Image 1 (cartoon, rainbow, N blue to C red):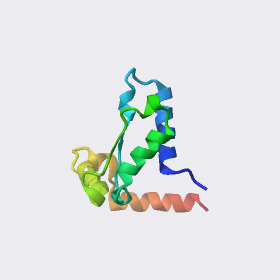
Image 2: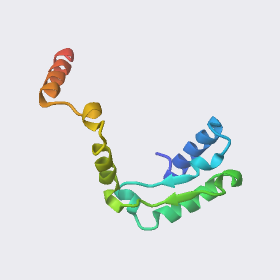
Image 3: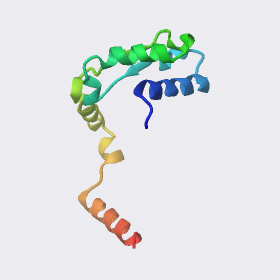
Length: 111
């Protein structure tokens, strides 16, 4: 019932092209895969081939699909990079007490 990966990526590319953010349309033609399922054998080659077939020639010229650099650990590597940022604790972390207070407020307001 859901659209295929090539159609979902192609739809995103259409939206990027229509947004006309820059004069250069090459910025959205590089697809970077990440995560464990992106490591399926032949996925990058097949996705690139299906995108070239699915998209008009003007859009499909120059498309590149890049497999995960760190394999199945790509998502963990990205998390590691973010957690090593100096602003990470302030922006995304909370103390145990803050968590408990927030969860209590959520519980009480749901009644």
